[in-house]
Length: 362
Image (cartoon, rainbow, N blue to C red):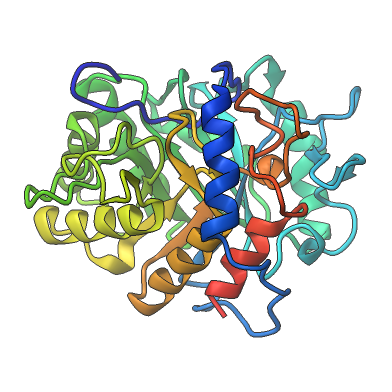
């Protein structure tokens, strides 16, 4: 997005080079603002698995161990399949994981260059056997997911079906037309009618205006919300991408000490969506990008994770996620790029953010 809109995205390729000054700022902020790492929580999350969703996004194409298409990560250094071992080892207290991103036409979708049928065969049964619930996410930054028939939507849904399928997440940020959005919503509604237990969420870019305007969703997001209401979708969640707000200014975020306060801004975005556009808090989810964002002056710390999780619990929001599992580890000390496999924050161990979110929800 350009012009007056800051850039918002979930991205599979990170290319911006970080300035040394930003790295220094990051270290200073981490030392000054982040509390000691949260211990592993022992209490349950804020809500039951039936109505609350908590867990990371996992970019499926990152850290695959060829020739296998089974989802895996190197967040702890060595390869580890998501279906291997206890789910809590990677995702403390999570209700599930969101696998990203399928794109293309429903029923003919692909996972970047990967065949959808092969992806499903390599993952769905094994995740279910491991007791790991999962959501399938579509679209994402630079990708488009479309649907023009109930038959295509049925094929799409059925491909990933198992008792552990939570539902589907539609990440819409690539400039779809109102007609494309309307067609997609029409067939999502049919899918929901056929399988009312499935959870449907819509991941959208957001502002977090603190200047009194209550700006939240951009024009694309407002089109999606209007289409949801036009088709009468009964059970849905709006998942706000509380990341990449841009240069610190009250028009886009909550400003403290010359920067966007990422936890406070995320809370402001939820309140704005609720108060101005009438979305119930129980149907709002939040997804920050942990560590250094693509907009490099936006830095989300473990301390922010605890604060945000506590807000989600206290205000009874519908869900909390983060981008992404693979990034929940520090970068090498000399790494100066935003990376899909580390977060740019020093002084914390692997899974520090997962533990911080879970601690805040305890």
